[in-house]
Length: 147
Length: 147
DNA sequence: CTTGAACTGAGAACGATTGTCAAAACCCGT
DNA sequence: ACGGGTTTTGACAATCGTTCTCAGTTCAAG
Image 1 (cartoon, chains in turn red, cyan, blue, orange):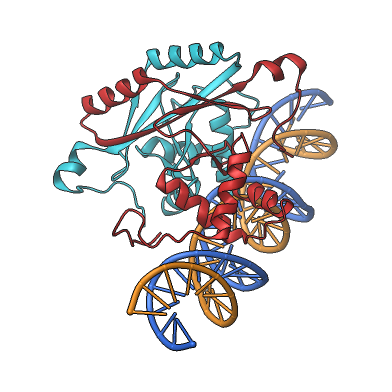
Image 2 (cartoon, each protein chain N blue to C red; image 1 turned 45 degrees about the vertical axis):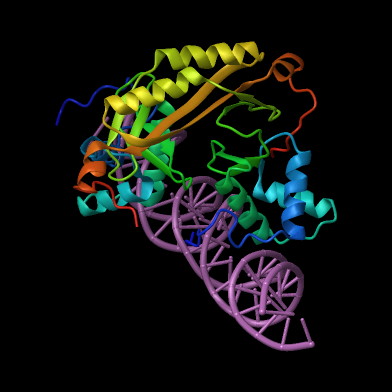
């Protein structure tokens, strides 16, 4: 990561590749890894380099235009989300994701941090579970490919 | 050095290497990566293979005898913690770590999960910030090496 | 059209983690 | 204490996600 942040959209140039990445993200509901997204782009006929996918996703995540989180295995996965601060409730079977908000949690985190003299705090909070469909039918409509 | 008999034989065999890993973990206050711990073992004169360190840490984390979390870069870091469910308030400058509990958060997570039909849920929650010392002195006594 | 900076892509490089497998350590019954 | 069966270890290779390199391409302004 270098530093060339002079103005909000300084030096960001709209390109075919970026549009393509944004497009797949708009089509997919669940969190996907850079490699999965790259494969999807390929399937869609869009030719984008893997490095470019990585770069673009990171930029978008940094800009806050998409959300990024890490799987239990440490892999980075991305998803187009609504704006604003929120957390995720993710089904570990099918990947279905629900955005949730918890003002109380935010307040709690801030309070705890202050009590211990911490400043400039941020937090990560994700909830993983099994959604109704997966718990019920034992796995209907697998939406995410996990080998 | 003779009172380290907390775990009730979890099907694991007590070996010199495991004791060594447990020992370093007991000495270190902050979260450390497997490689850092391996280096510390080396310095201490304990000869333990890197693969063994990885295996042991994973087993201990699975047993719940130590805590593991992932840095922003996705690297796994470990720390000897008090037992029971809790979260962490970590200084991103010096690595100082405070264990915190939030019954309200647990309840909230459970409630939200149920509302959306999710079962068998678990959650990850970590808070990162700058501790008083680091915010004040601008960085006193760096306890963790991060290039 | 010219020109320079931003962007891209193929592949190499990298770093954390895991797999391999023969040798060593350990436990238990004898 | 001894032997055998099992687990654990460790040096090293292999894997895998991610980043770097750098020459070629594209863009936007002059």
